[in-house]
Amino acid sequence: MPLVSSTPMLQAARAGGYCIGAFNVHTLEMLQAVVEAAVETESPLIIQSTVGTVKHLGPEYIAAAATVASNLNPRIPIALHLDHCTEFDLIVRCIRAGYTSVMIDASHSPFDDNVAQTKRVVEVAKPAGVNVEAELGKVGGVEDDIVVADNEALMADPDECAAFVELTGVPTLAPAIGTAHGIYKGEPKIDFDRIGRIASKVDVPLVLHGGSGIPEEQVRRCVALGMAKMNVATELRIVFSDAIKAVFAQNPDENDPRKYMVPAKKALKEAAIEKMRLCGSFGKANDFR
Image (cartoon, rainbow, N blue to C red; front, side, top):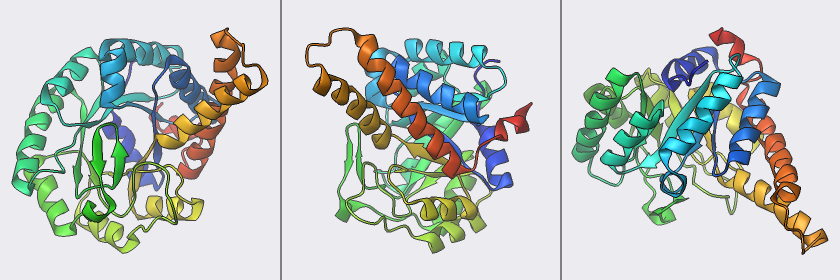
């Protein structure tokens, strides 16, 4: 089956009380690994690429690879998402290339400007059947070239979230609720009460950014409160890279990429399966048949 919009996937997840894993990939092997994890667990899947990866590989190459994966595995609904993009022209290029979901990140701008930028993207994406994600507040940490210091991270206001969704028509919202991009130095300080208040005021699926390293109990609590999509990036890069480093530690002269990419792919697949388990998405691909 072709790539699908993540909008109905995420609506079903929120209604069903589970979450869909969204995995940032940077190589073909990483893409294959998360697809294999989804097939093995019969989980819906969102493949993500950052702006940096899009500029490195080209959106056309990424979309073509994701489309092949989707066509080869028709029993698994797969969406392709552009994460944390601030450039309207790049968003349009990705949509034209075949992306089925895009994120406009204007969270660093004043509320009215964020509304205007998001509304502009929704007006382009909605007729094409493409999901749009936007962010309110500022999620701390580093995502490609976007850096938010801990003292600059701002929590999303529930009333502003409701107004934002109403004004923009955005079908997916990523509110800042205390998570951070990257690996946590200590225990994440997630504001669960805030998630509940936001979820009570908006009916669109909510997105949990900074899903690497959140303890299992906290992930499950976020999902129960309305988080329907969980982004995972840094943890995957670390697992993938550590597996490659292990090969070179044993054989520093290895020069066959297959010899280190195969174990890296296996390690990433196992990590993705664990995240899908936390999301509660095992077997949920059946919801879309």
